[in-house]
Length: 473
Ligand code: ASP
Ligand code: MG
Image (spheres, rainbow, N blue to C red):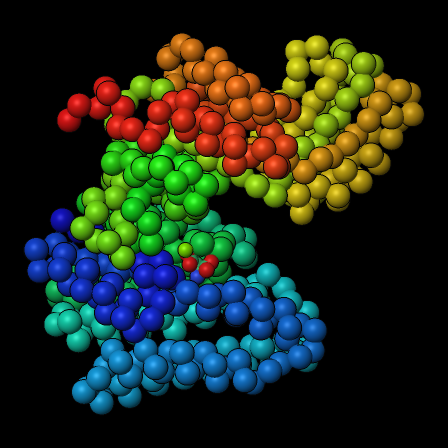
């Protein structure tokens, strides 16, 4: 098999973790698989790079930061290359080159005081370029040929800095040219996650947490047999274990369940990860590098067809419900269109929409950080309707969205009744509800303070702490 393996920040957070990641890659190669590794930055590094960029744009550049980053990576390099001074020199030189570039960018920024998305990408993408030489060195010291590869030579993207999208055909060609010869020579390429480049070679990033997405993009470009996402939890769970102590891992889920769950706040996967793998029907495994024996979760076309109903419950916090209401809204065409034009203009991402059929009220959920701006814009765009009294109020309130997700909710009667029964008996008030016509999720808006109880109540009501009776394997 050709396997693309991605290691997240905590999976490469120290010399020990990097050596463990290398062992996992080498073990797979020893079983006869061909392996491509995709690495994140060491944990917390991207945060400090973003911080540095923001501070520099206010005119301050603190050279101590370069020294700190160097120290962290040097210590890892020393441990990983112990006893091999040539390798150590080579890795340190690569790290210095990246840090020189980083320092120059920050210094320039501190002079011009203007942080463009393009410049932020150039700076925030440094972490992966620092980590890849370390991971490759660890693989070499575990006995396999390996070299770091910059994803700017692999993934071709659009020019949406801060959230670029891959261009599949161009990426396929580049990935083949860069990675195939290495794979054929029996090497394990270590590709930087998170970043890519435009057709002109300008560095872009795929958005925070985007290394998962990188792995799936590269997997699709190489028509890999599987994509493995090594993270720090036992795969996708029935709920956030921090919130629901008896949450359990799901052995099999479908692509659509994985993307619903990622979208509705399950932090395990970047929400775009599934798309490229899905296009080529490549199974994605989510595995725990801290507990590699655990089978984790396998994401595939069919998922687990034996479990009916709800598979998992998630929640999204720090969101606001915007409600536009008024008895005069009935039958007045265009209010909804106008409202969503405003939202689009403000580039706010709508997580959920609900409109009562009486048409007296439309409401939608967006990130709380965007709410004040969107409400202001709505009030100004709908001024006439407000003056005429067609709309009485445009209001926002902080809320949480709780979602129950599962492919086989479709056509399973009684799910909504169980949902409302569970919330009713926990005394939780449901502010709004929406069910996509795919019937793969029911999302509920509840007060922020009720979210945890709502998630626990639903988890209990659908007996998600227990392996479903139907899943006899
Ligand atoms: N290092 C990047 C981030 O922290 C990408 C990733 O870890 O997936 O957002
Ligand atoms: Mg990550």
